[in-house]
Length: 117
Figure 1 (cartoon, rainbow, N blue to C red):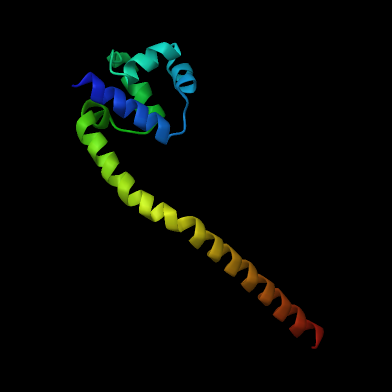
Figure 2: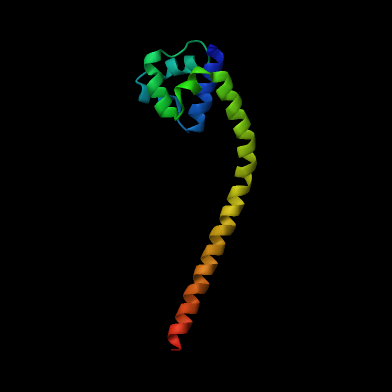
């Protein structure tokens, strides 16, 4: 296993989970400088931390043990996800506004029907 690739993977997965180095270090019970050394590829985490890391970062053991493949998969997903996420805020806003307008129209219609019965 390549220490540099593992470090890049740990940093990428941590960032995707929106966890700071300090928060992750606290969850693992280590000092932030240890995590920093892992992410920079200077050292590798002990196997005793593997279960905690997979739980915190929501990945499998296989993902951690094969960082090159996992990084490649993440980069492929990122390029397609970026395209989808760019469209979502606008689509979500249109859908929400449409639902609000439909709800107002439905309430108005019901109120109008019951008023003139």
